[in-house]
Image 1 (cartoon, one colour):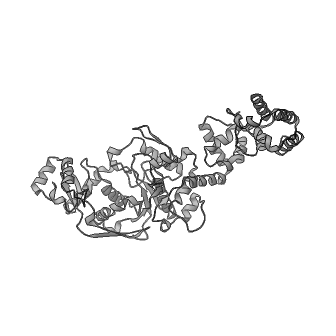
Image 2: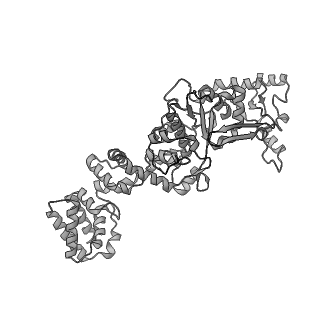
Image 3: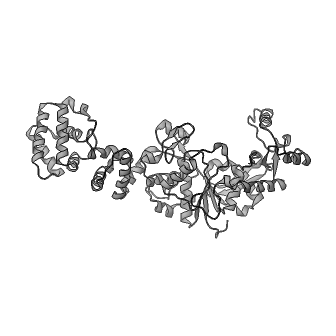
Length: 509
């Protein structure tokens, strides 16, 4: 690739379901590379397989990227000079290239019916080859333009007989390329079957469409998951036959993201209780909901950060990176070639660190949305800001803020009386009655004063502070959690603090 060629990268998802975090990582690496080199990031919708198309999936992809802050420069939404950006709208483009390959003897028409293909799999099955492919050994025994006469082929085409166009893979040739991550990679063509390029419905397969689209959209670098490595020889040949290898993008194949038992999957998420999609996805066919990182309570900043280092590092000990830092530090040659294991506890650590790192006002605005989604509408922004700053060290997820803050704005509905009752007695009942009288007369409603007064009354009643601190916490909060109990009391205010103590004493008495 010439050095003066403008960097243009693309992400090309199929609108078939939720956006896996591996897909978002591919977007992220594309995005970082484009931004670092002053290039363009293109989103192209690969919807050539109409049987797998799922309504709503395309819009969902755009929503996920918007939440993550990875907006494309060109797409079906943004437009651009190289559209259409939806493959189904480019259908007419592909046949001409497929026909060109047939004319040059590099592809052929195949008229085999599904029954004939199934028969082939039975006829050529051996112990050594239990799953025969339509390859150089088989094609001369099938019904295609290589075995039929030109007249018969023309007749079948004229009669619109159902057919596909397959690439004619050379026999026993070595094909290779230089992967930006893995270095030199080579394949023997005899091990690759004659992939379908154009389906019977006139739509291209991924193999033809990706090459044609990357050429027409002037893609300079093609980054994709390592699961596409076995298809590389087909794509290299298509580049060679159609456009010349000098026009082929530079390739990098990213390693898999691994779960507890191999490649990370939706089933892992369901089994182990962590999200694997960027945002909630409900399958319109089954109604099955798969939870997303957003709804689980992840900040987009943390999500991007944890994905970036899942298979890449900058050579330092640094773990927390903003998007701007990632843009300046990212390099393809530091992406690992082996799989990276997803660790949900580490993912939550990233989120907790970003909760602490985020500007107070920004974090408070996000928490306000989380509370509103749970039906708790807070109108006192300065109070919420104060509460969020007090409890943020206790929250790993944004959703944790509901339990950590709700009691500041409404009386707890459930009281953990079982934690108080076994050691409750009349001495403690009288102690808290005295605390109420003291607090009613206190003019300086500050945490330090409240704590000193509380401890003095405890000492006068021959009680250890530890014996009565937990009951006080449960009276104010409802449970055994929360920040320093007197900080809670200061924020709740005199009237509400006394009211909650009295209410619990009534329940205990």
